[in-house]
Amino acid sequence: MTRRRIDINADMGESYGRWTLGNDAELMPFLTSANIACGYHGGDPHVMRSTVRLARDHGVGLGAHVALPDLLGFGRRAMALTPEDLKDYVTYQVGALAAFAAAEGVGLQHVKPHGALYVMCSQDERYARAVVEACAEFDRGLILLLSGEVVATAARVAGVPFVAEGYIDLDYDPQGNLVLERVKRVRDPQATAERAVLLAREGRVPTADGPIPLAADSVCVHGDAPNAVEIARAVRDALLAADVELASLTHLVGGAKEAR
Image (cartoon, rainbow, N blue to C red):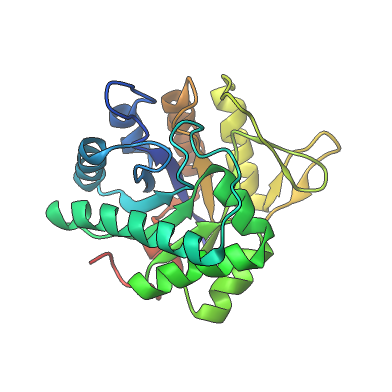
C-alpha cells in the first residue's frame, strides 16, 4: 500500500506595525507550507520579508495568503465586489509577496485565500474563477490551496494545480461545513493531533453526529491560536508516528514545478 503523504500548512506573517499576532518563529519548524499575509488583512512589508526569510531558512514552501482589503476586520468581512476587482486584488498581493521571495532567493509555491474570501471562493464560481485566473496569469505552476468542489472544478478547467485542505483546529457540522470561530480558542493538542491522523489515514473528520468523509491532502493549523505551537508540534509528531509522510504542496502535486 502506498504510504500516505500530507502537507501541514499554517497562516503566518499576520503581525502589523507594532501589533504582533502569533509566534511565527516557533511555529515555522513544524510546517511544510506557510501561508504568508500580503498586507490586506495582516502583515506589512517588513513582516512579509522576515516571514519569507524564516520560511526559507526552514525549507518551508511559501504561499501568498490573499485576502479582501479589510485590515480593520482582519479580512473576515465579506464585500460586494466584481470578479475583475478580485482578480486584481489577488494579482497585487501575489506580486508583492513574489518580490520579497525573489529578494530572498526563493519563489512562491502556492496561493491560499483568507477569511471571508475563502468562503466566497468556495461557494461562488465567479470568484473561484477570478482567483484561478490570477494564479494562471502569474505562473501556471502556482498551486491553489482551498477546499470545495466549486474551486476544484475552476482550477481543473484552467489547468491550475489544486490541493484540497482540511481543518483540524476547527469543527465541522454534520453537513461538512466549517464552524467558524471569531476568536481562536485553546484546543487540546493531543485531541487535535488525533483529528489530523484520522483525516490523513482515513479521510474523515469528527462531527457531533459522528465522523464524516473529507478528502484533503493538507491540514491547516491556525497560527493565531493561543497554543498554535503546541498544536503544530503534536500534529507533526502524531502524523510521523502514524507513518504518514510529511510533504510540501509542491511535492504533493508532483507535476507542479519547484518554486522558482
